[in-house]
Amino acid sequence: MIVDHHNHVWKGASSGGFLDEPMHVERILAEMDMARIDVAGICSVAQDIDNDYVMRAQKAHPDRLFGYCFVNPRDKGARDELRRYLDMGMKGLKLHPRLHGYQLADHSLVDPLLELCDEYKVPLFSHGGSEENDIPFYFEEVARSAPNVKVILGHMCALNLSDDAILVAKRNPNIYLDTSTAELFSVKAAIKGIGADRILMSTDWPGNDFRMELLKIEIASGGDKSVFRRIAGENYLKIM
Ligand SMILES: [Zn+2]
Image (cartoon, rainbow, N blue to C red; front, side, top):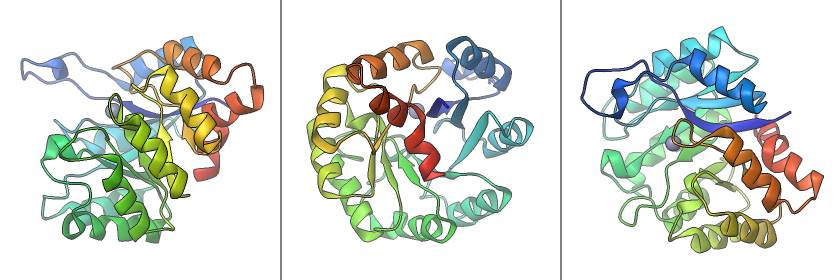
């Protein structure tokens, strides 16, 4: 089974930006079919959080889509919001420290959410790679304060910090690397550095195309079908 855990959907807006063009559920499903992606993880975007839309998509297509609850920890109701959606069946927490203006290693903001991830046994997945907000060592700080929570390091902190991402994944068994945006070279280095069991294929659709990401993982696997299968699905099924 092919699982691509990190993608976005939105209803469309009239903000004069990239959100104007709707990225509906039907649209992602069509592209998944074209690329033969069985299951995709989805969330809204940090610029326009809409957990209801994601929840409805998961409910309508439970065999194809699962949702991450997006919250801004600086919002007073963030913890309640997360609990509400986890109670409804969402599968994880999504954060974007850069766009929401905080540091991932800020315990006062992130720990209350991390506790809920531990309680509900769901992963914490964050954007990664911005020097002031979500560097690999902040992920390590989070991973060490909640060793039972699986911490997914977005984009392998590409482009400049992927080596550090591999380093912290090497010494923290609860850190997982998300391949979107990461260079082929970095994905190969990750497989060499930590093995194939904690690397998760992710396209970050519609930012990238499912077929490109699949090809990247196939090439990075170097013909080893077991490595490909784990990165492109089995690892995530284990997390779920
Ligand atoms: Zn994304």
